Length: 132
Image (tube, rainbow, N blue to C red; front, side, top):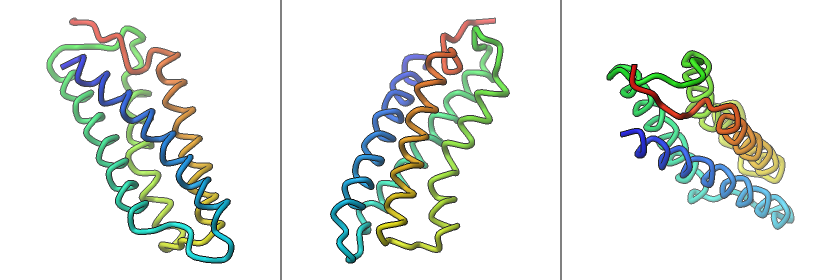
């Protein structure tokens, strides 16, 4: 289950980068037209589900006796909650806008989430998991 969590988190990192690139490309190519399609909104839902599932697997690891070596499980849970709710939250805050400014906002947020996820790896907030 530890390996499964790591795979999901790696997928989350690359998915964040892909969403950022997609939104940035859409913002550059908007030229006054609608820049984000329903495909992007579907990808945002998949992103939120991926982060939520990763969090659930992490919580399951915590409940079955595993612990982060860094001992910062509260920080892990807070970061994962942020990553799970922020993209749909931005959609709600922007009232579903799909113009160039919205694409730029999504690109910036996705790149921020990408860098946040990388920093979680660097600070060992996602592993290694130890049996207590």
